[in-house]
Length: 205
Image (cartoon, rainbow, N blue to C red; front, side, top):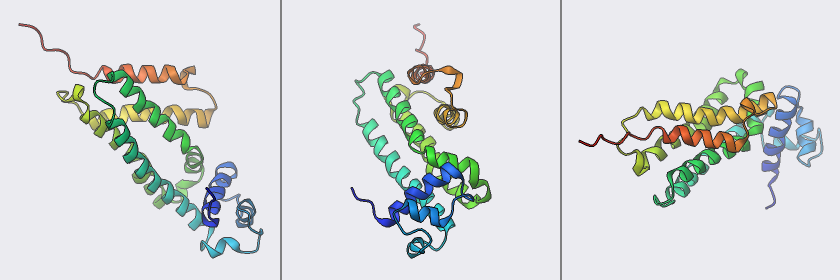
């Protein structure tokens, strides 16, 4: 599908910010990467400033994340409970890994540049990160196996969701797999931990 000029500006600016940093990327470079005449002011027909481009990119990623989380929950919820719990858990974990990987450019921008823009940090927190953790809570509570588990689901989502986020962030920042664990190893371990949350069977009297 053909991208609009505005979409090209947002996509290319985020790529450049991720590669070079926000301060080191000029408006002219964004225009050139977006197919506009560099230095001719084409960007300003869509945005007031470079900052507004960054803010728009983050806001659009947040909006897309909310939609994706809702769609993923619907898809995962559609899986029959007859499907093995381990298989369902594996799908949850892999969906989270895919989402974090999809946001790799935004992740680099976040760690390099967003400390100077606390209002944009809040958008990332509330629009991208928190919805993922909330989705984990929602999913677990909907599974029949966990109905009788009286657990701190917020805390558990922090641990399980944080592990997924950390696995990808470690790769992005260090360039290696955390603990040298391949993705399938990580998913299998994640599933085992989640299965361990199941209530113990009541003792037979």
